[in-house]
Length: 156
Image 1 (cartoon, rainbow, N blue to C red):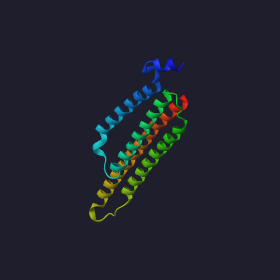
Image 2 (image 1 turned 180 degrees about the vertical axis):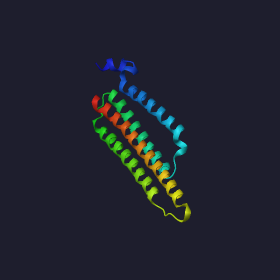
Image 3 (image 1 turned 135 degrees about the vertical axis):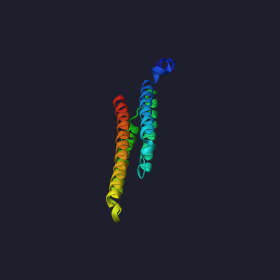
Image 4 (image 1 turned 135 degrees about the horizontal axis):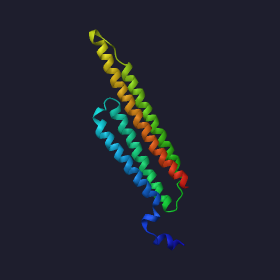
């Protein structure tokens, strides 16, 4: 019976891993499109938070690919699934931290002189931009990791 799996084509032995590759290709395409469209609009805390969230996403997704490969080799992913769940939570919390940083930008600072209204509008606009970009990327990254977790958990 072991000889049957060793002589099977690699594509049929690694179906879960190949599905992970296709999913990652779609995610990467969407992230590149978003970076091209909105990358130059990041500023303030979002310049730190968004790349940090994407690093967590890349690490967790790479780990999910490793778990998919191991599952295709007959090794259960049970022990590693908790790490994906943790990474999804970290992405959400980093997004929330970016939201707090954006609100801090909005409400920190003092208005002085005749430029008060203009200064307030600039702070609110920049703060909202930081808050929304960090929250969006944090939630999106969390969803990607949770989809990977769900697929691996369903396969076990």
